Image (cartoon, rainbow, N blue to C red; front, side, top):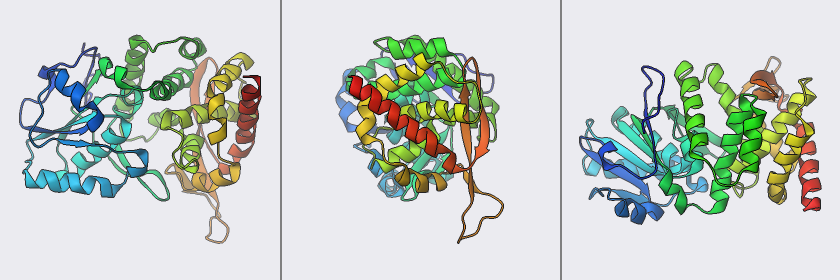
Length: 354
């Protein structure tokens, strides 16, 4: 089914159980796909271009050097400006494929067929493409919206349980971002992921992205959980998956809001978050490892009084509120120290109970 999106939205969005070949580009196209999905792609009756790239790419390889061979390959085909790139895979692959499409011939069309829950509800929609630098996550990128997003839930059956849990945290984020604690509790306490949740998350994000395509205001709210989450992810040496790090950052954001004088979240919800996150406790880096990464976050900026000898940084922080939409505040990175400590305590407590 095609999902309703705002008039003039840059991306057509489809949510299906099984892949539909008619949704592939009508003109010339090529494929960049996760090699683990090649068999499922062919068994789904989908054509395989002779010049397709079947690859394996991890978070550690989300670098500019990874896409250079792709660009060279497209130039050898050659791929012209009327061609479309189809990206089949998770968030790392779609981020890189979208970036490569933005760079090649100064921008060619692309489609994204996300195959992970995280990709379906977050990474694939919105036109953000990117690669990591040694200094931090997604510090290189471009806004280059795909022409079409095709989310086939049947592909989710290829995922390990950990990767389904990884995507669940982006759904929880979407609920808490809107202050919808009932929906958040439902996602936390229900077993299998429901297609209706994916549809609801896509519809919400499409609206936000349409109103603020280049993240000048409202779209920053979608970074809820990502500020400390990105630091925890990088500091773990990427042993934490992205969604897991967002879940940890989400709980810390609830605690930071309380520290900043906002209405506290119910203890029952905080306990439910901590209980589900407790297995990740051994991967939570100490505060001293997180602070330098927060200073280098792409949302950070130099504050008045900044010098090389005495750096002063501010960072956009998203603070959730129970029953209301989240808000933005510009704060010093060090404000995350106390929520980080409380996060560790909550996880340790739940781990001990288990």
